[in-house]
Image (cartoon, rainbow, N blue to C red; front, side, top):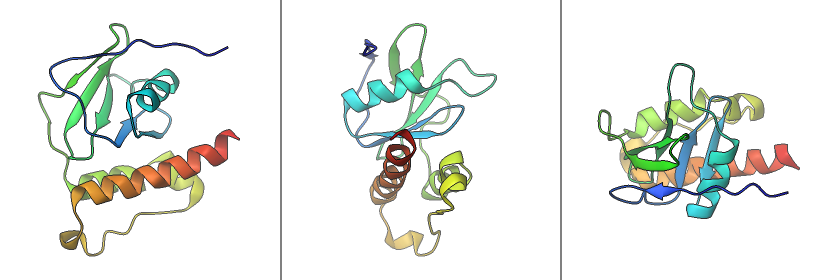
Length: 131
């Protein structure tokens, strides 16, 4: 039985792909439908009431599960290349696969390319672990 989720996007849409930070692992979504499925499987980090989402421009969004609303983050709104790479390299996804994202040549890589690369790593691992 498929679980349905209704999501309201407040103020502006995230640009895809996105990285979703759940308490157990990272998820990736290439569109609103994939984002919704990731949100169903996700839980906020300990001590938080929202789930963080990073879009391909490095902007942070938040998902409020009890309200079903995705909205732009207001306190820490821009993730750096290094912070996104560190997030992935320290994640359960990276630890389980033994695959790390290289921090070499960051100046020559666009932030959007880094997010896309990491989303591909997340998707390949999550599809392997789910069947």
